[in-house]
Image (cartoon, rainbow over all chains, first blue to last red; front, side, top):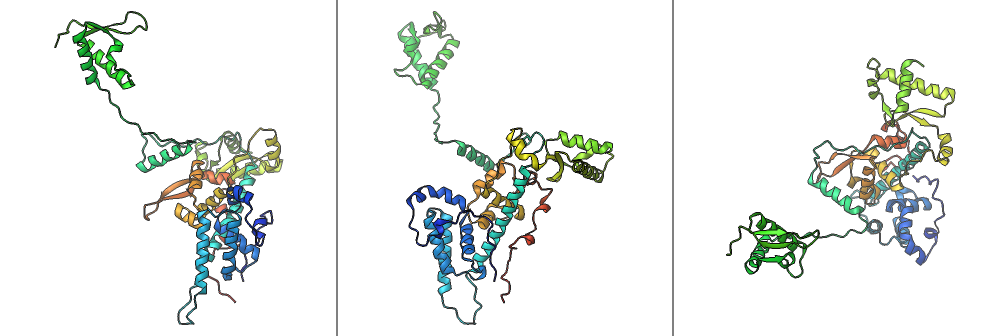
Length: 264
Length: 181
C-alpha cells in the first residue's frame, strides 16, 4: 500500500471538483479557463490531486472511478479546450477499456496497463516536490539582498556575429512575437524606370525649347515616377542636352535645351 | 582579521556578483584557493560573531556579501532595494526538471510535465537561468538545456549538490513496482 502524501496547501476545498454532480457554472466557464489552468499546472497535477483526495493506493488505482472524476473535473473546471487534458482523458479511457479485457489466465504474464501511468505520476510527483523545495529556496534567497543589485548584462557573441539560419529565424520569431498586433507586409520591388522618363523628356525637348518640371511627370506621379524623372533630367543635364534652372527658392525647375542638344 | 581577509572583504563588497575562489587569485597570486576559502570562512564567522547586518554567503560556486533576511521587509518598505522578480510555478517546475535531468531537451521536459513548455523554456533562457548546452544526437538534433550559475544565485545555492537528493524526497522515483505484500 503506497499512498501519496497529502499536500500541505491547496487552499480552498475545491468546490468545483468536490461538487458531486456540479452543473457547469457559466461564469466560471467564461472566466475559468486561464484561472483554473493556473491552479493545476497540468493534467498530471489534476490527476494527482484526485488520487490524493480519494486516498487511493497509487499502485492499484480504480481507473474507472478516477477516469470519471477526471472527466467531470475537466468539464467543471472548463478545461475542455485544453488539448493536454483531453489527451489525458483519452489515455484514462483507453486504460479503462484495457482493464475490462479478460485476462488469459496464467499462460501469459499480464502487463498492467496502469503501470506506465503510475510511473509518470510518481515521476511528476517528485518534480512537484522539488519545485516546492526550490520555491522555498528562492523565497529565502529573495530576503537577502546583494549590494546594489545590478542585473547582469547579456553576453554578446564575439564579433563577427556568427549564427545559424535556424537561430536567425528563431530570433526573428521572438521579435515578431513581441509585436502586439503583428501585421505582415509584402514589400514589392518597384525599380526606377529611367529609360521611359528619358524618352519622355527627349520628346518634350523636341517639341518645345523650354518647359516646366511638372510637364515631365505623368498625370498622377508616384514616388518612383518623380525619382525616375529626376534621374533622367540630371543625366541629360550632365550630358549637356538640357539646362536646369530654378528661378527662385522653391520655384519649379525650368528645363531648356542645352548646348549639346541635337534634334533627333 | 589579517590583511588577506580584509582584502577579500573589500573585493566582495566591491563586486556586484558572487566571486569564485579561483577568480580571487588575481588579487594575490601567492594565495591558494584554500587560503581564500579559509579567509572567506574567517570573514563569515567574524560577521556572524559580531552580529553584523550583512553576512558572507556561499552562492553559485562563490562567495557574496548579502543582507540578513531579518531586515528584508524593512529595507524593502523603505524602497532602498527591490526584490528580484518571482518565478511562476510553471517556470520553477521546468527548472526542477532541468536541474535534475540536465542536459535535457524540450520533449523530455514536456513528457514529464504533461504540458507544452516551449514558452517557459524561452522565458527561462531569456532570464539567463538556463542555457543551451548542446544538441541531442536524436532526430532533428533538438537543443539540450542546462542550468546556469544565475540559477544557483537565484535560489541561493552554492552548487547543484545543494539541491535535495532524490532519495530524501517523500516520493523517490521508482522505476519498477515494489514487491507487494
